[in-house]
Image 1 (cartoon, helix red, strand yellow):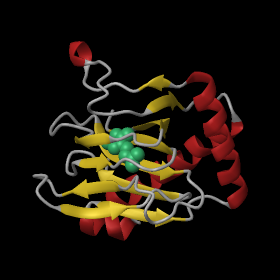
Image 2 (cartoon, helix red, strand yellow):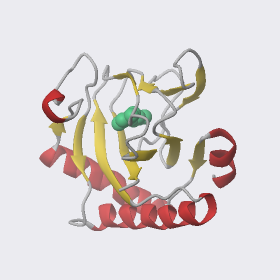
Image 3 (tube, helix red, strand yellow):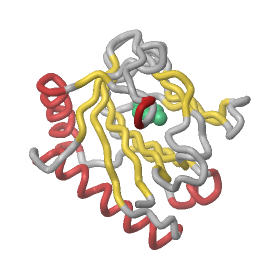
Image 4 (cartoon, helix red, strand yellow):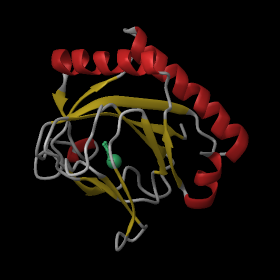
Length: 190
Ligand code: OGA
Ligand code: MN
């Protein structure tokens, strides 16, 4: 993972969690999303609002209130320290939310951060979908910086973690033929 990030600015890691942790996290995601998901918005400050032409996921932020969510946050804190030690990224904090896209849902091409603001430095997406089949769609497409070429296409397979530099890679979520669950997160510089 460290080598991929240093060489390419992105990384794909399979098998992040032990099977029992993954199962509990899948259950928590479903329960928490069904109890408290809200439609995700776009933009900041006075530009913030729901725009279903841009993104169609429903989200719920992780916190310490259930063991599986707390366990995932602890795993990412471990990763934060490792990345700072080995890549000197200066990652200060981490935030993440569960995300549910119903069949047909998408998130159009976007950047998670804007150059120079040093807020979101490194994006992460962890997938929770067992038995994802070729042909079910839902890929994460990662583009080069000017958005003219696809750098990689990622199938949203359970237990797969994707990381990419937030300011460098525009990306989009393609519609799928089934529900798609994930945890989208960001290591921040402040
Ligand atoms: C996001 C995002 C990608 C994915 O939530 O900002 O780009 O694969 N998610 O779910
Ligand atoms: Mn994104």
